[in-house]
Image (cartoon, rainbow, N blue to C red; front, side):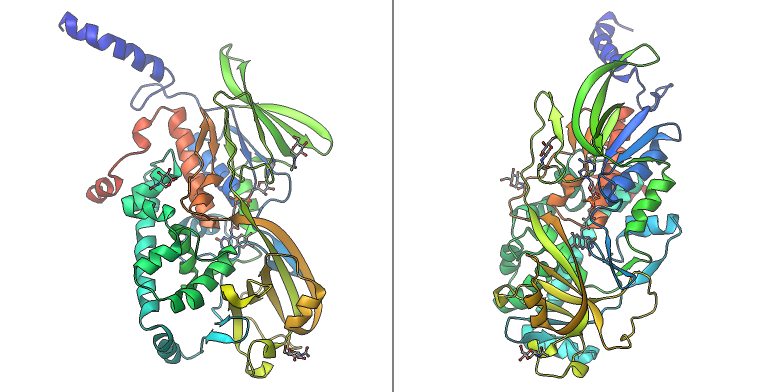
Amino acid sequence: MGRTVSELVSPLVGLWLLLCSWGCPGSAEPRSPPEKIAIIGAGIGGTSAAYILRQKFGKDVKIDVFEREEVGGRLATLTVQGEDYEAGGSIIHPLNLHMKRFVKDLGLSAIPLPSGLVGVYDGETLVFEQSSWFIINMIKLIWHYGFQSFRMRMWVDDVLGKFMRIYSYQSHEYAFSSVEKLLHATGGDEFLGLLNQTLLETLQKAGFSEKFLDEMVAPIMRINFGQSTGLNAIVGAMSLSSSDSGHWAVEGGNKLVCSGLLQASKSNLISGSVMYIEEKTRTKQTGNPTKMYEMVYQIGSETRSDFYDIVLVATPLNQKMSNITFLNFDPPIEEFHQNYEHIVTTLVKGELNSSVFSSRSIDNFGLRTVLTTDNSDSFINSLETKYSVRKKETPQSSTDGTYVWRMFSPETLTKAQILKLFSSYDYAVKKSWLAYPHYEPPEKCPSVILHDRLYYITGIECATSAMEMSAIAAYNAALLAYHRWNGHTDMIDQDGLYEKLKTEL
Ligand SMILES: Cc1cc2nc3c(=O)[nH]c(=O)nc-3n(C[C@H](O)[C@H](O)[C@H](O)COP(=O)(O)OP(=O)(O)OC[C@H]3O[C@@H](n4cnc5c(N)ncnc54)[C@H](O)[C@@H]3O)c2cc1C
Ligand SMILES: *[C@@H]1O[C@H](CO)[C@@H](O)[C@H](O)[C@H]1NC(C)=O
Ligand SMILES: *[C@@H]1O[C@H](CO)[C@@H](O)[C@H](O)[C@H]1NC(C)=O
Ligand SMILES: *[C@@H]1O[C@H](CO)[C@@H](O)[C@H](O)[C@H]1NC(C)=O
């Protein structure tokens, strides 16, 4: 071979050898797996990451999952008279494929959720009321809103249909280094553009009427995200898909998926609160100085620390919530100033005073869900009957004519407020949350790669907050961590994946 060529090539080879000394695709010796991985947060994001990381890195890596409260995070139940009810994330869409697979892998059961009748309350009256007769619903919808609800379905299906491509990419193990790249790979410029548009302007441009937006769309945003149509159009479309049928939940409570994944991944749960993360150089047994992350955490009043090769953050990163300090990073790891919506869940077992909503007697009040419009001046965002996480069969009208109702409200309800809605009640329990981001497009999504081997899962909530989104982000971060560890750059941020995988079929 000519000298000039080798002269040109050798620096590249040198660089290649340097970069690939730990193993590159196709190189004979793959880099040995990391020794220790830390995950912060044992919600659905953190626990699905543990599950995938175990599959990718094998049985020898030690995986520690830090949780300062309960395993499950925003998947949690509240107890009323010895029965548990979902207080946070409760409904799972039939096309949430990761959740579906986890439930199957873990041997858990799905409970189909009955789709009860829905009404929309504007503070004075029910502006829309579903009927148990399919044909009557059709006529009502057309009468009230023309064919807009059918057009709405088509728009939502189109948006979600593209996003479903993510499952194909992930099953082929492709990863993305940012939320924007992940979104772009599924639906292109148009889809990513929705992140910078409000749902309101998107649907107005598409010709939907004010009446339809106020009476149908806004109430769905209020129950799902405690805000109105000013949120971005991606979360808007995902939220509208909650009006589909075929929803389900996990028997025994959705949080069982988290504890199940934790156990199946053979991770070690550390019940403590992470305070600081700092990169330091350590000498491992092999004698090589290696960069690792030192994590300082608190268990009770005791402060401890440990070193990790890779760290994944699976909780919203802000002072009010996770309160994690990144020490001495250069450049510093930015604070993400995403505001989270304060939402209170209240469960009431009692008799609804249906005359608040309608002149019909309680016996003829068939609604299982009452949504509210923005101008309703209502102290609640929504009201719905909930069934215990144990019940598989369709819920009975309880023997004493009372149901358990779940309300979402921006503030804690007073006794007087509860008595405005219920003629009488036996029990009321509540839980308050910093529930999901307050969406205000244009959205700037946080980075997935915070530092060399430090990843942020929960940033995906800039696009939508849902169990499945956390699972998708966890899957992505686990694949990304794996590919970056092994230098598989050809598996990261690939263009034209949709076309490529289509021709591979
Ligand atoms: C009221 C409500 C209703 C919802 N309804 C639905 C629904 O019907 N369907 C749906 O799909 N989604 C729903 N969601 C959204 C869904 O619940 C969330 O998107 C999802 O559960 C988020 O999971 P996660 O693992 O990303 O975060 P989280 O569940 O918040 O987990 C983060 C965990 O990290 C822990 N943690 C934080 N900081 C530290 C620290 N410093 N050290 C140690 N541990 C720490 C926290 O205690 C927490 O357990 C709802 C959410 C709420 C609040
Ligand atoms: C959305 O807006 C943000 C902030 O203005 C900008 O950084 C980003 O590039 C925009 N994204 C798209 C897809 O237009
Ligand atoms: C955040 O953590 C620091 C110590 O790490 C503590 O002093 C402070 O009170 C915490 N802030 C909140 C809002 O929890
Ligand atoms: C039910 O609500 C109506 C209308 O707000 C009110 O007039 C009535 O007194 C209430 N009934 C009970 C039993 O609280």
